[in-house]
Image (cartoon, rainbow, N blue to C red; front, side):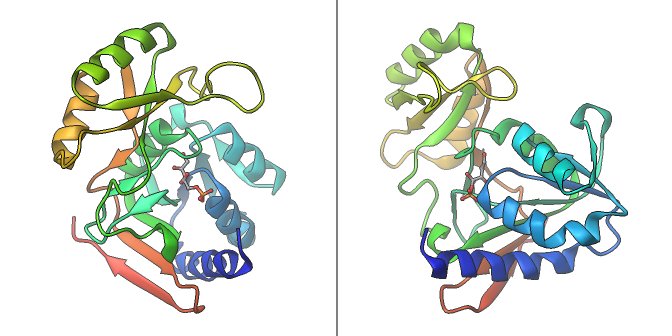
Length: 229
Ligand code: 5RP
């Protein structure tokens, strides 16, 4: 990643800290942008509790000295902060580059306010753009889900681990398929189709789950886009 991109993310993360307000329970996504936010915000998070969407984020938060709650004990989040792989200006996103989209979606859905922090290179004209959509699947259902998606005209690849042979296994014990829908497929229909296949746990298309999008520009400026619920 170039230094302009990391500076853009940092500037956006600093802006996102303005939304901490009085939030007591802060939900956190997963990935390098969330790490930037977490490191910058850790001082202001000391007297709050955080709930993490992944082991990676939970470990970092606890290394920083924060109080980390298990998501199973939390039914409501005051503020959720995350990033995305792709986002458009209708607030639709592709997430799951870090294979944490299932708990990310749970925490975003449980939150009163959802703030997503991106650099401008992640903003695309229309989601999905260049990235496939990650789909978390029960390992026992992988062959069936793959076949069903193929029949529906999706192209599918199994995400392979860098650290072991075979598929990436998520924190929840699922495997990840990266899927590309048929050309010109309607996004809401794609989301519905993915959810309807038995064995699919969750997918990385996020629709209507962002309240504030903070975009760090490579020029150093930051733009904030607010969405109505
Ligand atoms: C993890 C995600 C991340 O938000 C997404 O992959 C962006 O990560 P990064 O900030 O490292 O670019 O969805 O599941």
